[in-house]
Length: 336
Image (tube, rainbow, N blue to C red; front, side):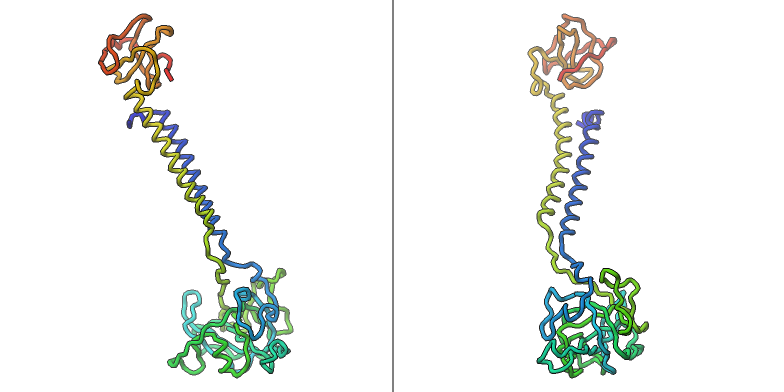
Protein backbone atom coordinates (compact mmCIF):
# COMPACT_ATOMS: atom_id res chain seq x y z
CA UNK A 1 0.00 0.00 0.00
CA UNK A 2 2.97 2.32 0.59
CA UNK A 3 4.02 2.02 -3.04
CA UNK A 4 0.51 3.03 -4.08
CA UNK A 5 0.63 6.06 -1.77
CA UNK A 6 3.95 7.17 -3.31
CA UNK A 7 2.68 7.25 -6.87
CA UNK A 8 2.52 10.72 -8.49
CA UNK A 9 -1.26 10.67 -8.69
CA UNK A 10 -1.55 9.73 -4.99
CA UNK A 11 0.95 12.41 -3.98
CA UNK A 12 -0.96 15.02 -6.00
CA UNK A 13 -4.17 13.94 -4.28
CA UNK A 14 -2.40 14.22 -0.91
CA UNK A 15 -1.26 17.77 -1.69
CA UNK A 16 -4.83 18.76 -2.59
CA UNK A 17 -6.18 17.11 0.57
CA UNK A 18 -3.59 18.82 2.77
CA UNK A 19 -4.43 22.17 1.17
CA UNK A 20 -8.10 21.66 1.91
CA UNK A 21 -7.32 20.54 5.47
CA UNK A 22 -5.18 23.62 6.11
CA UNK A 23 -7.91 25.84 4.72
CA UNK A 24 -10.50 24.19 6.97
CA UNK A 25 -8.25 24.59 10.03
CA UNK A 26 -7.78 28.29 9.25
CA UNK A 27 -11.55 28.67 8.98
CA UNK A 28 -11.87 26.93 12.34
CA UNK A 29 -9.38 29.37 13.87
CA UNK A 30 -11.35 32.28 12.40
CA UNK A 31 -14.55 30.96 13.97
CA UNK A 32 -12.81 30.62 17.35
CA UNK A 33 -11.61 34.21 17.14
CA UNK A 34 -15.11 35.30 16.17
CA UNK A 35 -16.55 33.56 19.22
CA UNK A 36 -14.11 35.48 21.43
CA UNK A 37 -14.77 38.80 19.68
CA UNK A 38 -18.49 38.32 20.21
CA UNK A 39 -17.92 38.81 23.94
CA UNK A 40 -18.97 42.13 25.41
CA UNK A 41 -15.87 42.94 27.43
CA UNK A 42 -16.05 46.73 27.26
CA UNK A 43 -18.53 49.43 26.47
CA UNK A 44 -16.96 52.17 24.30
CA UNK A 45 -19.55 54.64 25.57
CA UNK A 46 -18.12 54.31 29.08
CA UNK A 47 -14.80 55.71 27.86
CA UNK A 48 -16.48 58.97 26.84
CA UNK A 49 -16.57 61.31 29.84
CA UNK A 50 -19.86 62.63 31.21
CA UNK A 51 -20.49 64.79 34.30
CA UNK A 52 -20.62 62.83 37.54
CA UNK A 53 -24.13 64.09 38.28
CA UNK A 54 -25.35 62.51 35.03
CA UNK A 55 -23.52 59.23 35.50
CA UNK A 56 -24.44 58.45 39.13
CA UNK A 57 -27.36 59.26 41.37
CA UNK A 58 -26.35 60.43 44.83
CA UNK A 59 -27.54 58.29 47.72
CA UNK A 60 -28.13 55.21 45.49
CA UNK A 61 -25.95 52.12 45.04
CA UNK A 62 -23.73 51.96 41.96
CA UNK A 63 -25.42 49.92 39.24
CA UNK A 64 -23.67 47.87 36.57
CA UNK A 65 -24.62 50.48 33.99
CA UNK A 66 -22.96 53.23 36.07
CA UNK A 67 -19.82 51.34 37.06
CA UNK A 68 -16.60 52.05 35.12
CA UNK A 69 -18.01 55.19 33.49
CA UNK A 70 -15.48 57.92 32.74
CA UNK A 71 -16.74 61.06 34.50
CA UNK A 72 -15.77 64.66 35.12
CA UNK A 73 -16.25 66.53 38.38
CA UNK A 74 -15.19 69.84 39.87
CA UNK A 75 -14.62 70.31 43.58
CA UNK A 76 -12.27 71.16 46.41
CA UNK A 77 -10.03 68.61 48.10
CA UNK A 78 -10.54 68.65 51.85
CA UNK A 79 -7.34 69.48 53.71
CA UNK A 80 -5.92 66.65 55.79
CA UNK A 81 -8.46 64.10 54.55
CA UNK A 82 -6.06 61.86 52.64
CA UNK A 83 -5.91 58.21 53.76
CA UNK A 84 -3.75 55.43 52.35
CA UNK A 85 -4.97 52.04 51.16
CA UNK A 86 -2.16 49.44 51.26
CA UNK A 87 -1.65 46.37 49.10
CA UNK A 88 -2.35 48.01 45.73
CA UNK A 89 -0.44 46.78 42.66
CA UNK A 90 0.82 49.04 39.89
CA UNK A 91 3.03 47.63 37.10
CA UNK A 92 3.79 44.60 39.24
CA UNK A 93 4.89 46.61 42.27
CA UNK A 94 2.95 46.78 45.54
CA UNK A 95 2.20 50.15 47.08
CA UNK A 96 -0.53 52.45 48.37
CA UNK A 97 -3.44 54.40 46.98
CA UNK A 98 -3.88 57.97 48.21
CA UNK A 99 -7.63 58.54 48.74
CA UNK A 100 -8.89 62.05 49.42
CA UNK A 101 -12.30 63.65 50.07
CA UNK A 102 -13.47 65.92 47.24
CA UNK A 103 -16.27 68.30 48.23
CA UNK A 104 -18.63 68.96 45.31
CA UNK A 105 -20.15 72.47 45.44
CA UNK A 106 -23.84 73.10 44.80
CA UNK A 107 -24.69 69.44 45.40
CA UNK A 108 -27.17 69.86 48.24
CA UNK A 109 -30.20 69.29 46.04
CA UNK A 110 -28.82 66.02 44.63
CA UNK A 111 -29.57 64.24 47.89
CA UNK A 112 -31.79 66.27 50.22
CA UNK A 113 -31.50 63.72 53.03
CA UNK A 114 -27.78 64.45 53.23
CA UNK A 115 -28.57 67.98 54.46
CA UNK A 116 -25.48 69.51 52.98
CA UNK A 117 -22.93 69.40 50.21
CA UNK A 118 -21.91 65.94 49.03
CA UNK A 119 -18.40 64.55 49.02
CA UNK A 120 -16.75 62.12 46.63
CA UNK A 121 -13.94 59.77 47.60
CA UNK A 122 -11.18 60.18 45.02
CA UNK A 123 -8.24 57.79 44.64
CA UNK A 124 -5.76 60.44 43.51
CA UNK A 125 -2.95 58.07 42.58
CA UNK A 126 -0.49 55.33 43.54
CA UNK A 127 2.76 55.58 45.48
CA UNK A 128 5.47 53.15 46.46
CA UNK A 129 6.44 55.27 49.48
CA UNK A 130 3.67 56.26 51.93
CA UNK A 131 5.90 58.97 53.38
CA UNK A 132 6.12 60.77 50.02
CA UNK A 133 2.38 61.35 49.53
CA UNK A 134 1.89 65.08 48.80
CA UNK A 135 -0.65 67.29 50.50
CA UNK A 136 -4.03 67.86 48.92
CA UNK A 137 -4.08 70.39 46.07
CA UNK A 138 -5.63 73.71 47.09
CA UNK A 139 -8.40 75.53 45.30
CA UNK A 140 -11.04 74.26 42.93
CA UNK A 141 -9.87 71.27 40.90
CA UNK A 142 -11.21 69.59 37.76
CA UNK A 143 -10.90 65.80 37.94
CA UNK A 144 -11.38 63.18 35.23
CA UNK A 145 -11.55 59.56 36.28
CA UNK A 146 -13.42 56.27 36.28
CA UNK A 147 -16.39 55.94 38.60
CA UNK A 148 -16.16 52.62 40.43
CA UNK A 149 -18.42 50.70 42.82
CA UNK A 150 -17.57 50.74 46.50
CA UNK A 151 -15.32 48.11 48.02
CA UNK A 152 -16.50 46.28 51.08
CA UNK A 153 -15.19 47.59 54.41
CA UNK A 154 -12.47 45.44 55.95
CA UNK A 155 -11.52 46.21 59.56
CA UNK A 156 -7.73 46.28 59.89
CA UNK A 157 -6.62 46.83 63.45
CA UNK A 158 -3.01 46.20 62.41
CA UNK A 159 -2.87 49.23 60.10
CA UNK A 160 -1.13 52.40 61.23
CA UNK A 161 -3.03 55.65 61.68
CA UNK A 162 -4.10 57.24 58.41
CA UNK A 163 -4.58 53.93 56.58
CA UNK A 164 -7.71 51.91 55.77
CA UNK A 165 -8.10 48.42 54.36
CA UNK A 166 -10.31 49.27 51.38
CA UNK A 167 -11.91 52.14 49.50
CA UNK A 168 -15.27 51.89 51.24
CA UNK A 169 -17.47 55.03 51.27
CA UNK A 170 -19.49 53.40 54.05
CA UNK A 171 -16.35 53.45 56.20
CA UNK A 172 -14.99 56.75 54.92
CA UNK A 173 -18.23 58.61 55.61
CA UNK A 174 -17.71 57.89 59.31
CA UNK A 175 -14.03 58.75 59.12
CA UNK A 176 -14.60 62.08 57.37
CA UNK A 177 -18.03 62.76 58.92
CA UNK A 178 -19.56 63.83 55.61
CA UNK A 179 -22.18 62.32 53.24
CA UNK A 180 -20.53 60.50 50.31
CA UNK A 181 -21.48 59.19 46.91
CA UNK A 182 -21.93 55.41 47.01
CA UNK A 183 -19.04 54.87 44.60
CA UNK A 184 -15.57 56.38 44.37
CA UNK A 185 -13.48 57.93 41.62
CA UNK A 186 -10.15 56.60 40.32
CA UNK A 187 -8.49 59.81 39.13
CA UNK A 188 -6.78 59.83 35.72
CA UNK A 189 -6.30 63.59 35.29
CA UNK A 190 -6.36 66.72 37.46
CA UNK A 191 -5.99 70.41 36.72
CA UNK A 192 -7.08 73.72 38.23
CA UNK A 193 -10.72 74.53 37.58
CA UNK A 194 -9.66 77.55 35.54
CA UNK A 195 -8.37 75.19 32.83
CA UNK A 196 -10.51 72.88 30.69
CA UNK A 197 -10.82 69.18 31.46
CA UNK A 198 -8.05 67.04 30.00
CA UNK A 199 -10.18 65.39 27.34
CA UNK A 200 -9.75 64.66 23.65
CA UNK A 201 -12.15 65.98 21.04
CA UNK A 202 -14.33 62.86 21.21
CA UNK A 203 -14.72 63.13 24.98
CA UNK A 204 -12.23 60.40 25.84
CA UNK A 205 -9.24 60.91 28.12
CA UNK A 206 -6.51 62.99 26.49
CA UNK A 207 -3.35 60.96 25.69
CA UNK A 208 -1.18 63.41 27.66
CA UNK A 209 -3.52 63.62 30.66
CA UNK A 210 -1.67 64.00 33.96
CA UNK A 211 -2.19 64.50 37.69
CA UNK A 212 -1.40 67.68 39.59
CA UNK A 213 1.12 65.92 41.83
CA UNK A 214 3.96 64.19 39.93
CA UNK A 215 4.80 62.26 43.09
CA UNK A 216 1.70 60.13 42.49
CA UNK A 217 1.39 57.68 39.62
CA UNK A 218 -1.83 57.72 37.64
CA UNK A 219 -4.01 54.68 38.33
CA UNK A 220 -4.23 52.12 35.53
CA UNK A 221 -7.80 50.80 35.73
CA UNK A 222 -9.74 49.45 32.76
CA UNK A 223 -13.37 48.53 32.48
CA UNK A 224 -14.41 45.26 34.04
CA UNK A 225 -15.90 42.67 31.62
CA UNK A 226 -19.68 42.83 31.51
CA UNK A 227 -20.26 39.61 29.55
CA UNK A 228 -17.77 36.76 29.28
CA UNK A 229 -20.06 34.26 27.59
CA UNK A 230 -18.77 32.57 24.42
CA UNK A 231 -20.79 32.54 21.20
CA UNK A 232 -21.71 28.85 21.04
CA UNK A 233 -22.69 29.00 17.37
CA UNK A 234 -19.20 30.16 16.36
CA UNK A 235 -17.73 27.49 18.61
CA UNK A 236 -19.84 24.82 16.86
CA UNK A 237 -18.66 26.03 13.46
CA UNK A 238 -15.04 25.91 14.65
CA UNK A 239 -15.43 22.23 15.61
CA UNK A 240 -17.23 21.55 12.33
CA UNK A 241 -14.34 22.91 10.25
CA UNK A 242 -11.90 20.67 12.14
CA UNK A 243 -14.10 17.68 11.29
CA UNK A 244 -14.04 18.73 7.63
CA UNK A 245 -10.22 18.89 7.77
CA UNK A 246 -10.08 15.33 9.08
CA UNK A 247 -12.58 14.23 6.43
CA UNK A 248 -10.36 15.67 3.66
CA UNK A 249 -7.47 13.49 4.84
CA UNK A 250 -9.80 10.51 5.19
CA UNK A 251 -10.87 10.91 1.53
CA UNK A 252 -7.22 10.73 0.46
CA UNK A 253 -6.67 7.60 2.55
CA UNK A 254 -9.74 5.97 0.98
CA UNK A 255 -8.45 6.92 -2.47
CA UNK A 256 -5.09 5.21 -1.83
CA UNK A 257 -6.72 2.18 -0.20
CA UNK A 258 -9.14 1.69 -3.08
CA UNK A 259 -6.30 1.95 -5.59
CA UNK A 260 -4.37 -0.69 -3.70
CA UNK A 261 -7.36 -3.00 -3.33
CA UNK A 262 -8.13 -2.74 -7.05
CA UNK A 263 -4.63 -3.98 -7.72
CA UNK A 264 -4.98 -6.86 -5.30
CA UNK A 265 -8.49 -7.93 -6.33
CA UNK A 266 -9.30 -6.54 -9.77
CA UNK A 267 -12.14 -8.98 -10.32
CA UNK A 268 -14.02 -7.25 -7.45
CA UNK A 269 -13.58 -3.73 -8.82
CA UNK A 270 -13.56 -4.05 -12.64
CA UNK A 271 -16.43 -5.23 -14.79
CA UNK A 272 -14.98 -6.86 -17.88
CA UNK A 273 -16.47 -9.67 -19.91
CA UNK A 274 -13.37 -11.68 -20.56
CA UNK A 275 -10.44 -13.42 -18.98
CA UNK A 276 -8.14 -11.88 -16.40
CA UNK A 277 -4.43 -12.64 -16.23
CA UNK A 278 -1.56 -12.10 -13.85
CA UNK A 279 1.98 -11.19 -14.83
CA UNK A 280 4.32 -12.68 -12.24
CA UNK A 281 7.27 -10.53 -13.31
CA UNK A 282 5.27 -7.29 -13.04
CA UNK A 283 3.13 -8.44 -10.12
CA UNK A 284 0.03 -6.97 -11.77
CA UNK A 285 -3.22 -8.11 -13.35
CA UNK A 286 -4.09 -7.37 -16.95
CA UNK A 287 -6.44 -8.35 -19.76
CA UNK A 288 -6.27 -8.44 -23.55
CA UNK A 289 -8.45 -6.38 -25.88
CA UNK A 290 -8.57 -8.10 -29.26
CA UNK A 291 -10.07 -5.05 -31.03
CA UNK A 292 -7.26 -2.74 -29.94
CA UNK A 293 -4.66 -5.48 -30.08
CA UNK A 294 -3.31 -4.36 -26.71
CA UNK A 295 -2.89 -5.66 -23.18
CA UNK A 296 -4.21 -3.39 -20.40
CA UNK A 297 -3.32 -3.19 -16.72
CA UNK A 298 -6.31 -3.19 -14.37
CA UNK A 299 -4.75 -0.67 -11.96
CA UNK A 300 -4.79 2.09 -14.60
CA UNK A 301 -1.11 2.82 -14.04
CA UNK A 302 1.30 3.25 -16.97
CA UNK A 303 4.08 0.72 -17.18
CA UNK A 304 5.62 -2.11 -19.19
CA UNK A 305 3.33 -4.76 -20.58
CA UNK A 306 4.30 -8.08 -22.10
CA UNK A 307 4.47 -7.89 -25.88
CA UNK A 308 1.54 -9.48 -27.64
CA UNK A 309 -0.02 -9.86 -31.04
CA UNK A 310 -3.74 -9.82 -31.88
CA UNK A 311 -5.10 -13.25 -31.28
CA UNK A 312 -2.57 -14.18 -28.59
CA UNK A 313 -4.03 -15.54 -25.33
CA UNK A 314 -2.12 -15.97 -22.09
CA UNK A 315 -2.55 -19.43 -20.72
CA UNK A 316 -3.44 -18.54 -17.13
CA UNK A 317 -6.57 -17.11 -15.41
CA UNK A 318 -6.97 -14.95 -12.33
CA UNK A 319 -5.14 -16.39 -9.37
CA UNK A 320 -2.74 -18.34 -11.55
CA UNK A 321 0.70 -17.36 -12.76
CA UNK A 322 1.93 -16.56 -16.23
CA UNK A 323 5.45 -15.59 -17.32
CA UNK A 324 6.11 -13.68 -20.56
CA UNK A 325 9.14 -12.87 -22.59
CA UNK A 326 9.71 -9.24 -21.60
CA UNK A 327 12.49 -8.46 -24.10
CA UNK A 328 10.08 -6.38 -26.18
CA UNK A 329 7.75 -4.22 -24.03
CA UNK A 330 5.35 -1.47 -24.88
CA UNK A 331 2.75 0.65 -23.21
CA UNK A 332 -0.88 0.64 -24.34
CA UNK A 333 -3.98 2.50 -23.29
CA UNK A 334 -5.47 2.34 -19.80
CA UNK A 335 -8.64 0.65 -18.65
CA UNK A 336 -10.79 2.74 -16.37
